[in-house]
Each structure stands twice: as C-alpha cells, then as structure tokens.
Length: 109
Image (cartoon, rainbow, N blue to C red; front, side):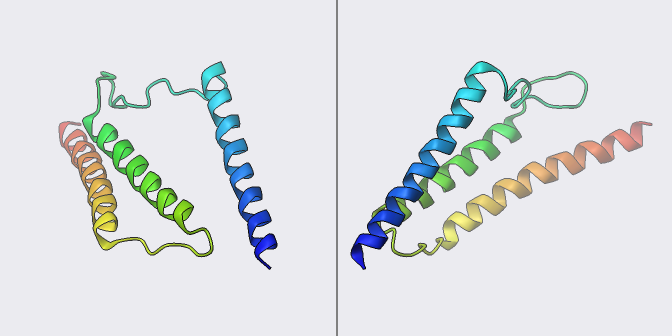
C-alpha cells in the first residue's frame, strides 16, 4: 500500500513541476503576457501598490500551504485561521480600493 502512495506522490509532484515549467517557459517567451500586471488600469497606467500586496499575500499563502503539503502528503493540511485572515484582508483592501475608485469616477462624470 505504501508503494501506491509513493507512486501517487511522485506523479503529483511530476504534474506540478511540469505545469510550473510550462507556465515559466511561456512567461519567459512572451506567450503569457505580464505587461501591466502591477499597474493601475485607470488611464494613467501608474504603479499599483494594492496589486503588489495582493500578489505577495497570494504567493505567500500558496507557498506556505504547499510547504505543509510537502511535509505530509498523505492528507491535505488544515489552513490556519491567521492565513485566511491575511488572504481575506488582502483581497478586501484591493477590492475596497477598486470600489472607491469606481465610485469617485462616477461622481466626476
């Protein structure tokens, strides 16, 4: 039975690494465009700190979860409440800023 779990683990890791490789290669060759990923979309195309903090929070929580999963791949780990609060707060900040900007544009029009 342990051999089956080992095989499934290696197949899962192989799939994740293959997916990561495809995304990395397509990003480096320009097939996946990252132009404007961290820029505001409201005309002036300036830098968006909300997008940066959202990206960092997403990558940090994904890395933390995958690290826990790599330690014990026999079951999915419990997501800590602190990470859910960080992730939810990050999204709330981003969406709140977007709502504020959309409301201020409607008042100007």
